[in-house]
Image (cartoon, rainbow, N blue to C red; front, side):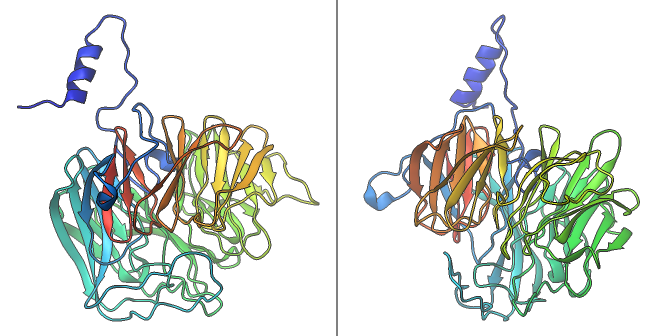
Length: 451
């Protein structure tokens, strides 16, 4: 049996009297944005600078690169020594992808037959361990040219993998890729104002329940299903509360209750996980809600944008009833603070070391003090910084991957301090994963490990 230099060092240090090591040997990243959906992985040093271009010399920091067929913005997830992700492969040709900021919003012309794949890779070597085709069919709905037919991220409890693609089905696999069950939830068409955006809400998992947010403008609903067999436990209509949303649901248990928080327009709504009954609602503002709610320092963070409004809220989990802000107020009994124009459009914010950071599609990065809501800075990263991927953080650094494939590495803190700018060589719209000091980027054609 061989042992890596890192493992040898950790084992040796741990044996020394008085030495405490703050690290997790496995450091799983089991869902979109990792543990608790917060986007943070601490305990190991991470790189600020790297070079993946072999033509420019020997790659520096690139541990491995694996080719991924088709197109998907599904983020990688990690359990123990395995990485899992989803992709959609057209019957023929290369799928189109249009990046950057533009006004033309026509759908992609690719309604031909696709294969939806779940792939598994070795975390350390990048070797593909298995691949499972879970569906072969024409897509149930169209997609935006910036989107894919596999936008959503898998979730796992270490025993099962859950994949959900809206109109293209819900699937449960074991960790070796064997399909355990599947379920068709019908034609969930998130086309809104004649624009085919494509489905993007990832499944959420808590104990024996799966939560799915399905905001088809004609019949929006949220549902809880049994993890063992996919049986529907409850389904709650969101008519009157939500016209559309592309966000993933947050499941949050604080000991008093377990709630499912769903971003939406015109209302952000929380539901009881046991019954599906509404707990609280908050009038938002942005009419294209995409960022996923998450919890940081005991507060629920929600952001949305578009249509002239871009609110950012920090909500107390004890909220009850209609907690909407009135008369220009920025706080009330249940909204700890808010920034009326501080929200982000596509990318989910991150709270790290006392500050909240938000990256926008137009390259603007904002930072607020998370306790008070005071703005620290608002600055543009550059013309190469259209951001769809959500921010992640580790080792005192914020990683901002842009659609153009440029990763801006920033020092965490109240002032914008750029540490590095690294080119992945391919567009990147998927949120990275981090484990044991290695950052895993899923680009338009590859999965690569930087460490």
